[in-house]
Image (cartoon, rainbow, N blue to C red; front, side, top):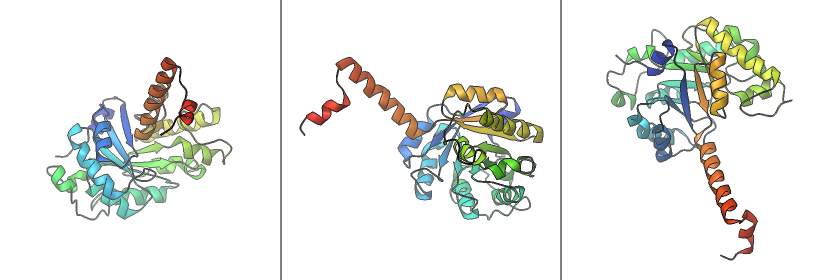
Length: 268
């Protein structure tokens, strides 16, 4: 029988860390998945990739043992079902604004009688032994709350039968909740944003579903776990690559007394 290790960990009260892949490359994905994340998500919505890149990334990450998930571009049945057929065991769906959309999303996640997912798990059938209707219990359906409308309908969305959790994207949430007054970004410290983020965790707990938050740093992620979040995503492959490269270059410049401007005076 197929199971989802994330659910098992959360049921024991253990928080998890999720990796994020936005670079459409199997080797990059393989490196990310080898770092010890509990799960790794492929960003098909905003990442520099499409389905043709996502499938080999899922293949490359299979050996890691991490639970593999995907953020789809929108509430679109074909995108959701193809990501599941490729082997994703969790789907993060953006811009869910009301209970009707949440119910529609859930219906695309599972085979009848629990939903309307079409059967044809092209890769999943080979990647996971015994893949079939029983996967209904294992896959995770995460709705993203990112707008003022979504916040207004939070309780109704969280009450949707079959919805496993809510995934918070703080960048879009800041734009939506404050009507553009605050710039998008992670690790919010503004009182109104902290209140909104904590409210989502409280509602999820009250409704018996899981809460996940995208963070910029492990320090903020740990704080979010203290607020009741079950899963936190910390940064992403592109951001981590840029940060590590920046630190390395800055240290070299410091030790050698050179600067980036000195390159402009050289010849090639």
